Length: 328
Picture 1 (cartoon, rainbow, N blue to C red):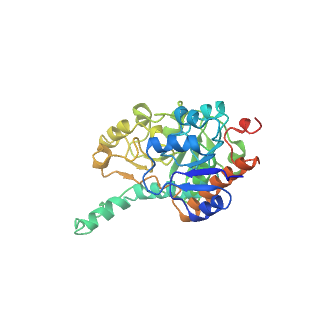
Picture 2 (cartoon, rainbow, N blue to C red):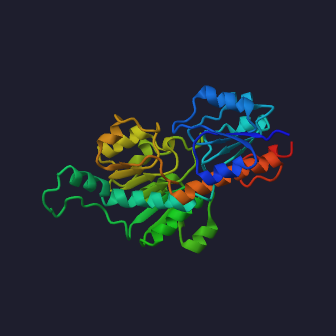
Picture 3 (cartoon, rainbow, N blue to C red):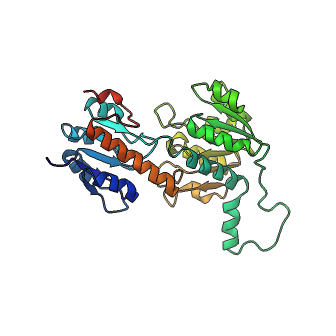
């Protein structure tokens, strides 16, 4: 009996590839760039499973092409806005993501951006390298203190809670806004609930965004919301780029509406080299590295591989996004 065929759209940690290769006929796309569209469609027609990343568009066209053979699409990311989950369910194709394993690592990066922007680390490093640091000046590179300040977290899921834990080490007051109130987190950690987004924005010295990208959260932070923030406030986004309106953010940073921003995600992504945000010294932009530790990226790939193998064997998947398809 032939082994099931699996297509992996990137070179991932070898441990995950070895796990799949032991039980399937495995094909791994060899380049660092994502596969062309025609390749993705071809593999969807001819494979039993696909292991994808956030740059792969898993839409109705692709899922319809895989109908009849494709059993599972395992997205190697906690977010799954690149996957048309409704279409996957309609076609009986299971979809999965990789939550939990990247929580702490992404929270580390969010807090690194808070510190980097507040203390103007990147700006200072850039000037030193360019030979522009000629003497010490009392107010040069002076930014706000992080310790003892106020942080508002937008989206108190697992990553948001981990950011809150890090903030307490800096004696920060932590507020949060989320459609779902978290009374247990309030009791255990002392985070304070804001009943609406404006309240969370107005109180904060730092705002850290951790909401998923949905139609409701697209451009959740725009011109109106940025004007509610303090002129000394700093915005950090490690969720998804389109949650923040980057045009409005550029104007707010340029005009002093807010003091700074740290972005691990942008719209579009990658951000073009001539994007106006890159002309500003009060913004730090990293190349979507929230989960980029060796241990975490390996854990993500292994979880995606285990989701695939479980589905192919008819077993319960560790993190299935549409479990209603499993018993069809």
